Amino acid sequence: MNIDKTDRQILMALLDDSRSSVSGLAKKTGLSREIINYRMKRLEDDNIIKNYITIIHQPLFCSGIATLLCKLRHIADKRSDEIYSFINDHPSINWCSELCGSYDIVVTFLYADSQDLEKSLSSITNYLGKDLKEHSLSLYISEYKFDRKPLIAGKSSEYRPKIVHFDDSKIDIDEIDRRILSELANNSRIKNIDLAKKIKISEDSTRLRIKRLEDKKIIKGYTIVLDTGKLGFEAYYMGLQIENINDKTINKIKYYVNTNQYIIFCARTSGKYNIIMTLNTKNRTHFSELLLEIRRQFSEDLNGYEFQIILQDHKEIFVPKNLILKNF
Image 1: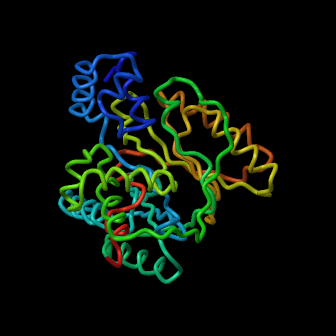
Image 2: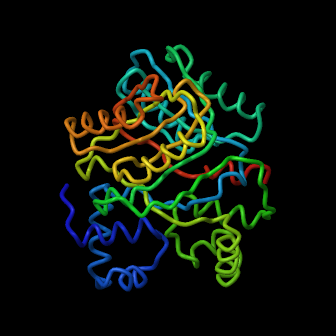
Image 3: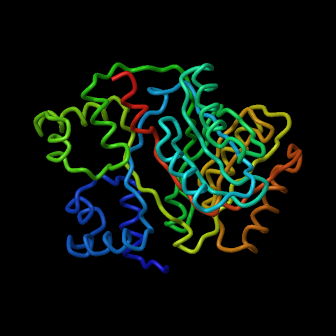
């Protein structure tokens, strides 16, 4: 679907803050409330906007994130539907994409410690059972980029070095905070009055608690999940094997991915491919050009690479609801 300047204005505003009221969006974009309502409804109906999610501080609920690549045997459509239903309901999985290439599925999941890592890994591989041909696990070390705004804006954002580390940082929150976060996690646009009814506290208390969670950076923002395929892009999942990882190499990687509008996500991992990224391209020719550019940029240290076509995203959330409510 082709989107015009007005659609882009709305999408940019929602990527920046998907919890903004219609009035707030109108003020930010200079558009009328009627246009905002109509365009948002159309973008939702066309499945360009897939969901409204909350950016929750992940280290509060985990000590790390793992990524699991799975190669499956030939499976029937019914079994495939069952697998994706299991993934969507899994309490630790926060992202899943269907791939075409050496692997068929990639998932990321949050874990609290080594025992929890083993438990989540076993739960996934055991469920896949005889349908799982092979798998590859790697652990996130640092996240270097996650930003879709340059794709909509048509240009790179100003480069501001930002790294997300997965550590043991903990902040005390109570059961009510957890219930608020669990509702906001997969629906950032829920109204305070509706949220208050669900939590069974006053609307004023709900508003104050959300503000406190924002001030403490437990809630780090609100954004949207986009189907970039509906915008005419092809999506790829790519792993790079970089030798001699040092400060100079890391800075070079961070600068490159953050100034390239087509690279949406990048992280350093512990696996065979120690840099992973997702990118969107205009077509296959554009991908070939981008791949050649990556190979040239890192020719001195690039020891190998592998890429898969992303066919469809099946799940995207920062922290799964069941994990937020764990132990309550």
